[in-house]
Amino acid sequence: MVLVHTSNGQLQALNETDGAVKWTVNLDMPALSLRGESAPATAYGAAIVGGDNGRVSAVLMQQGQMIWQQRISTATGRRKLTA
Picture 1 (cartoon, helix red, strand yellow):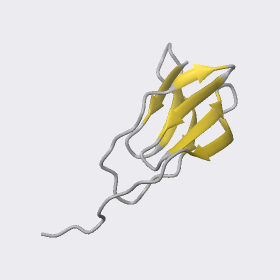
Picture 2 (picture 1 turned 90 degrees about the horizontal axis):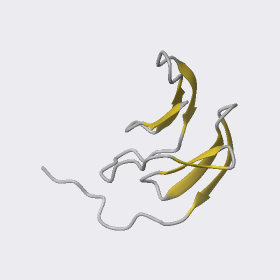
Picture 3 (picture 1 turned 120 degrees about the vertical axis):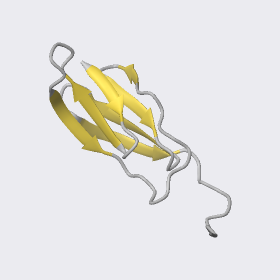
């Protein structure tokens, strides 16, 4: 199984032989993203990913089921964009 954390806020599991999508989980993502996505880590049968929304999520790898999500930080800084 190949795990991919996409820039549009998805965690996907792909078949390592043919690249077919096994499952997709949509993770919370802010409307404007500048920080990027983390590479998935694995532990005890779960994929663990950090998002630029300040949350860490754990997803069961065999089923593609989210088992928990925890906010570990809050984004700070200016949100106003000017042209």
